[in-house]
Length: 93
Image (cartoon, rainbow, N blue to C red; front, side):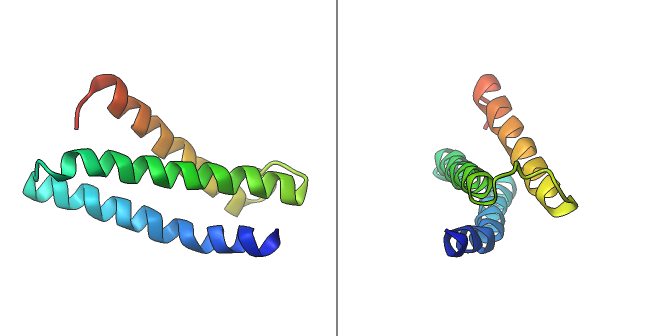
């Protein structure tokens, strides 16, 4: 279980960097094809981050709010999820 948590812990920064790169490229170039893919990248990153948080909570028997680094990952998830909901509700791409 700890190896899976470590794998997700190492994978998440790369997923957020890829998602950021897709959003940045779409912002700079306004590519119509990427408009739908960037939402898919964000959703998949959030889904994997949620799996990470749930796995970490069950693996360590405490919610991920006991130290600064755990709080930062919850904060990153919260901000990204809020943006995802805002993007869905307003339908602004």
